[in-house]
Length: 104
Image (cartoon, rainbow, N blue to C red; front, side, top):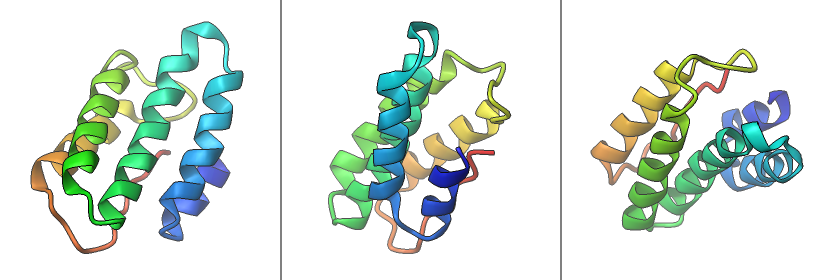
């Protein structure tokens, strides 16, 4: 989490996606959708940075739907806040300012 957050804070969402994807694929079955959703947030921001707001919106919306399943929070993540932030971002597209999301 710390490394993914550091990469997001450095506006390197693709690299954050790579970190989160590795965790997703190595996670226990009951956590995979959580990590998949977090990876989708990062790749959604990557699409936004690369000028693909439609792809970004689709990924961010799917990520929020996945994260909703973990609404009670886990791993120190305020998922209710994060999910609301991700949904707001998806609804506000296109954006051209840096995106700042807090995983923790």
